[in-house]
Image 1: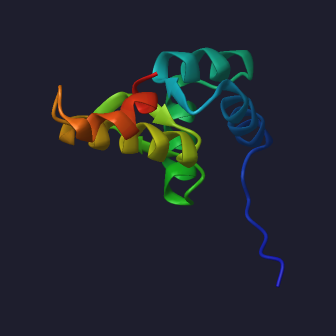
Image 2: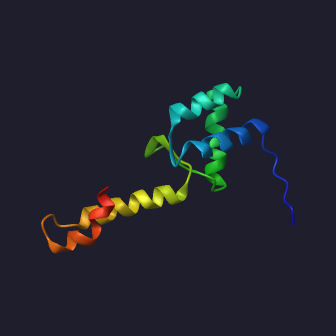
Length: 103
């Protein structure tokens, strides 16, 4: 029942640090964190790829290479606001319930 996954301890510390930083982290910040932990850029890239693969974060290196999404609820909330805001017609009564979303 208890699967054992062989992950370097530095990678775990790396993930925990990213998780503390908030929902969206720049890749440059990932490299700084990795450097503090003694990880090279290639190690950071491998860790990001691994944690993306197992679902602990989202990283789209081909589409959004500089951003790492560490908290899915934050990403979903921002996407929801963007979608709602894109369908609101300025000046119409439809905007009233959604005004608080623009805060």
